[in-house]
Image (cartoon, rainbow over all chains, first blue to last red; front, side, top):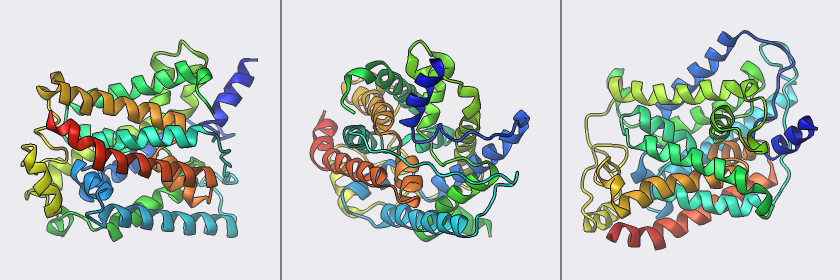
Length: 162
Length: 186
């Protein structure tokens, strides 16, 4: 029963579905820390986590963010196509899995609410972490509030249209 | 070399590097790129008193390592690779922001709006607390954020992600152009 709830809940999630069949020691996770560090550096150096750049994007005053997201998606599309075509395996030799997302109204309502918040804070969840690291300590409150928002969604989930 | 790195990186360098995160995470451990889920795992780890947060978050702990890395990356780039010059923003944006007394472009977030003093004003509360809440609530309701939907979802050609991304942009356009000016007036 618990497992069913878990499955149902996890299916709605963007990730939360990829489970390795292999057991790894905790330090295998350090590789994600390293990727995260590099990713955070790109975030700061390309000013993606800048409130000003986000305003420029939504006010159509600069091509920068469109270039970043557009070229990131293009590289992503090509990479995924190559992985599928050549049946690339993980470093542990596992089959790489892709998960199909199913549409629900939350994609629209939730997406719109997130968009409003993105333009206010100038940050999506990833940049929040990088902004804190870059020394904007008050963003800790924004992050805590975002965690509270996520929790509230979980609380009201059954009453919201999906 | 270091001087080149210290300059703001152009989109055609940053975008492909971000895009490469998708295959890297898949290849090093079969992980689908996504960041907003970390907020959910934090809930599951700290306040799991409702079914939505009752799952084995430890299986997704890679995601928390990843976001911790992002935080450290932010720290490293500011400490070691920082560009000493203020950010150059579009003149039209600078002109509009000057109306609201924003003129400090030295930080990544405008220090006049986001600081521990403004937090206790109505404007600051809205920008910092309400804005953050909408990011956390909206991303989970939408099932992902810019990384999970716009980048990972579009990379795997998923229609729900395209719809979600369009709604992110619609919300952002509405806020930045029509609502935010009223908030900044306070």
